[in-house]
Image (cartoon, rainbow, N blue to C red; front, top):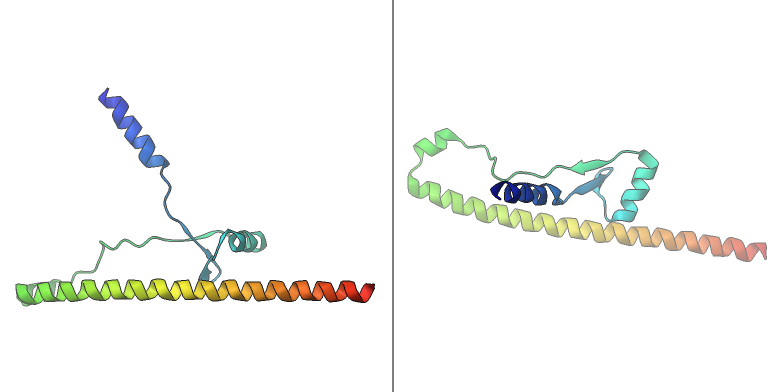
Length: 123
């Protein structure tokens, strides 16, 4: 019975999906439509690697020379700074995606207008 539960657990864990972020050239893909368009032109799939926050460089000299109070203060400040940087990065990425979507919509409207003008001239 234990074997059954263990295999069931591994099946569930292995079948779970991970969040992937596809890269279209120099920026992350906005949506599936842009990803498919980029892939059809280049035939290359790029996936942005997930960063592991646990692996940080530890400076042993600072750990040995600073007092425990200073270390605690530095950890608190660095955590706050990391949260602020992460939040600012999210806001920047959202703004960039909105801008790219707006640019794409404008281009699509221009293409539609050109097609309408060509059809009117032919009549």
